[in-house]
Length: 265
Image 1: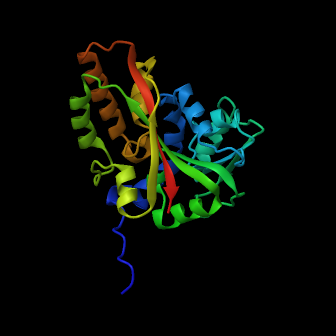
Image 2: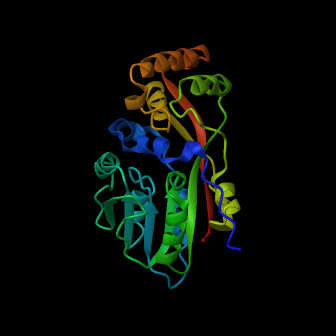
């Protein structure tokens, strides 16, 4: 008997929904997401072992929220991103054209990779790739002993979140969404072996109310391109919700990053 077939990816992480990241509207508001705390990049740099290449592969780099700061610390960062709009937006941001940063507009499954890498990172992106192709490919280009680090952002609870979840469920274009844990999904399919976890300290963050609303449109299911005129209805309801909680001009909350590293299989 052959090996047991792996379970298919959850439908809400499939290519129909993943294609939203090609929308220029998503790239235009991505900068409103909270930045990763500075400690994130210290922890990632420490994951490169002694004697390993001082190079990093960033999978699904987006606008370079990981790649741009890492390029200031490493000899080379290859930022692989399938959306041309994301790459263009990232190059216009601070350190977006750093000499150590090399952008490539391509899906990770087909990109030209310059192995070996001392580290691979994926910031809120790996779930949109073809795991059966991506994880073995990453494993093949890592230096001996090098790891893949999955990086996510966390935000402190806000009193309006239960009501916001109701709005999200009503207006999201990702009609198949279901709560999930990426690491668990990868582990149960035999794609990833966890070796360690870390969380940065909490960092205070503040942004305008309108930037906070825009930031939600950088999330899957809320591309203004896909929502069309309904996005204005959603924004008005979201704005009223915030006003009802006393949010007049700015939103302030603590943020952090969580890193899970291990071996891609």
